[in-house]
Length: 308
Figure 1 (cartoon, rainbow, N blue to C red):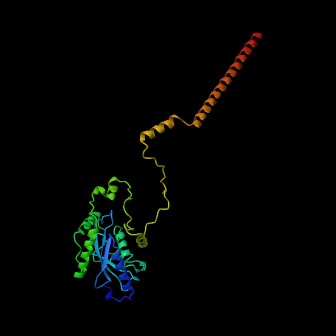
Figure 2 (figure 1 turned 90 degrees about the vertical axis):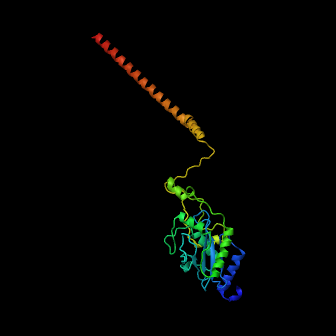
């Protein structure tokens, strides 16, 4: 292949370097190779990310590298019906030629394919060439995509597509069986509960790529801002109760706390009783004094009447 091209051309040198790297370090998630007659045109296939409606699917496509590569971005086109992107239409992404201002020469075909896998489960938001099929339709297309590669282009293109499809099938796990009860989003609507999909993978991060590829994809895909406040307004952090403590033990502990008040509470109740007794005693003493005065006044009146 190298003998047909000018090795002094920067684009040719870069492309041949990426071809060698792709062949020496293959991935189970994607495969891409250029045509023998034109190294600026690549055929590729990606595998749908796990725990999404694309899981198990094999999606073929075409990459067209510009003559100024890697200083200008490539264009991407999917050939397999998938329910997320239109087929045989250039995809509008920050890694494609629709947004050359975002492209970085350090990115490669491998980086772009990893990013494309990450973009599959994201919300299309009406982007050019995007589709918004239901999850059930996307799952059906994912299963169908394994049956045979798409028919596209010349015999040479088709031969390369068939070889890539066979490789992806050999690395692909069995198609997962999804039922309505297994869909977290459907359970959310049925139960009316706010169920967070913790187990779902981050669509902006590939599953099995190395740290360097993940860093590059993070630069391509815009991440959601992290919540700086771990306890939102109106939500209080509660102390966790160990799962080993039963409800009966909690009830017994509550009864003990009610039946056995703290020493401070008992001392306060004793002081209240003493104060009440003192008040009662003082009241009785006042009543006795008043009675004595009344009796003396009566006796004094009787003596006065006898004297008169």
